Image 1 (spheres, rainbow, N blue to C red):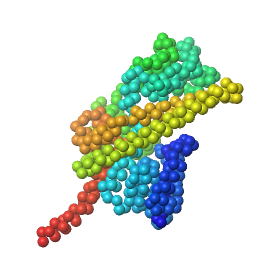
Image 2: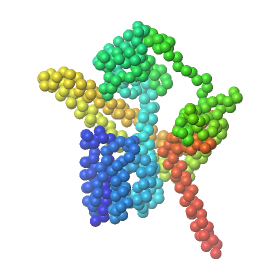
Image 3: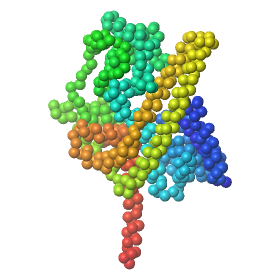
Image 4: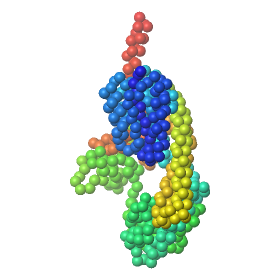
Length: 497
């Protein structure tokens, strides 16, 4: 019987503790192996967040497969369980093994068609892109929610999320302390450090039980959420939630804070500020105007001078646009990517339904614990202090679950359309870029770039994963075209003879 290594992974340690899917994955892979006449010679089990660097079991599996060439198969539940990033894809590809994506009913190996491999690679990038940019995908739905007067995210201190109304309600345990903080501050005898001590002595803690710091006190005192309004994405909205503090008190607090600390204002705004880092020392690249009209970008390092030279904005803009030339796609490859988008869209919907189902199950479990806890308190089985502590813990966990559920539910339903827009932007990115002013250029770069460095007077740009995959595909396509050219020339000469 052919030998195989199996790999199972859950996306967080929390899932491992609740036993969501590790055992289910192992059972699935074991059953599959028997049906295919495969022997699982080694099992690998992982429970880490995908965003954390280093997967010890994944690395162990790679080491094992390199040392055991007779093990020609890798069994995994589905694509996103195996790959964390494009580097993982390359690592697995170099092993030249058969990858069995059991739930997807697909086997990718050295003998697979180039088309199937390409579709597989695209799906990896798109699936990872969904996970990495989940918060970005929710922004549209959250903005729509804000326009209805509903706070679109996790409730700030003093409020709790209401799952039924999709809004926030006053937290009657914490709200009185916050109201008293504002009232004391109006009297003018309290600074931020004293405010920190004031709320600590009255039992106000973050939802994780930590100290409400001085910086958090400042944010609370300047947050219009407490008068029934709120700011979201730079826009001021009239909220539908109940206020904790009167407008009169809030405005007096703002006056006191403004008198004590007036923020420094910048005279100039620069289009590419904050976009790059210095390749020599890692500090941000900033800008300044010289001779009253020329804009230069340079390292922000103070103290010992950085060796990186300043660059004129026009030259910098030109260098930033160069990577966009790599995004042109052939018609054939464009069709392949659109097919991959459609398949990935279905994968995303299944993933979304699974994740929401797990979160709802956990929410309901916490609800049962809260009910039982209350019964135990009434029966005198547990002291009141213990009940309060556990109740706050369970409610806080429910609120975090609510937020995650909202993120998944709001995540872009127009996934397929967004994918097509990515392709359209990739095709036209450079031609659009060169015709725009600096500020419009910055908008295009924000959509496409992931990380940019200025070193030795040159720009080194990393593209976001979806665009990086397109650029890599273009490079591979050009390489294949060059490799085929001599062969086609030989064939043509033979035909002429």
